[in-house]
Amino acid sequence: MPGKTIIKTKEYQGYQLSQQEHTFQQKYLDRGIQMIDSMSSRHSKVFQVRMDFRYPQEMESDGSNQDFQKTLQGLSRELTRQGCDPQYIARREQVSSHNPHLHLVLMVDGNKRRCADTLNRIAEKHWANTLGISEEEVHQRKLVYPCNHDPQGNPRPNSYLLERRNPGDTKEEMVQQLSYLAKVDERDVTPSRTRKFFCSQFAKDEAIAREKREKWLQAHPQGR
Image (cartoon, rainbow, N blue to C red; front, side):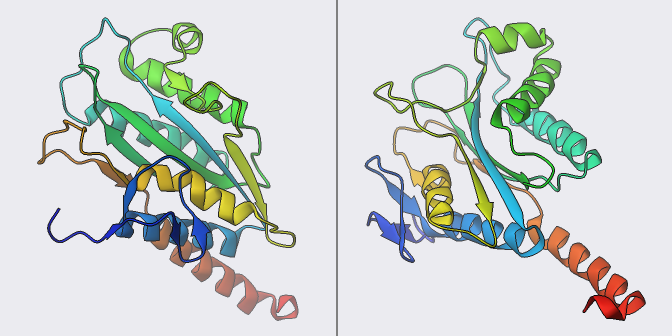
C-alpha cells in the first residue's frame, strides 16, 4: 500500500492494539487517539461504544456508501439535538458477503449518554429507516450488531466510560477497541476507488466548543 504507513506491532504509542492478528494503518490509529483526546478535553466523561451495520442477506446494496452515510448523518443529527456532541470513526468492509458492512466506533458526551443499549436502539431506528424495514426487524435480526462477543463467542465489553478525574486504564481499552477499524485486511474486496474510512469533524467541533467557552469566560471572568 504505497503512501501509507503500516504498523506491524501489537503496540502503538504505548497502547495495546486489537488482540486479533492484524497490521494497522497509522493515520487511522492517530485519528482515533486524537478523537479521544479531543472529546475528553471538552467533556469530563466520554462514552464510547462499538457496533456494526449489516444488510439482510436477501437484500443487495448498490455498492456505494450512500446507505451508510445516510444512517450516520441521521444518527449524528439526532444525538446532536440531544446535546450529546456525537463523534465517530467508521470503516466499510466487505469480505465474504455479497454486501458490505460498516464497523462503527461512536463517542458521545458521557454526561448525557452512557448506555450502549440506548445508543444501539437509536442506531437501529436510523438503519431501519435507511433500509425501509421495521425497527423491530432490525433489532430481532441484529442488523445493528452490538459487538459484545469475541470471534469465539465469548462475552466482551462493547463500551467504555472515560472519566477525566479517574481515567484508569479506560483510554487504553478505548484505543484497543477502535484500533480494529484501522486494521489492514487483504481479503477486503471493496473497490479501490470506494471510500473505506469515515471520520466526523471532531477538530472543527472542538474549535467551536473552545470559542464558546472563551466567550463565556470573557462574560464571566470569575469562572477562570
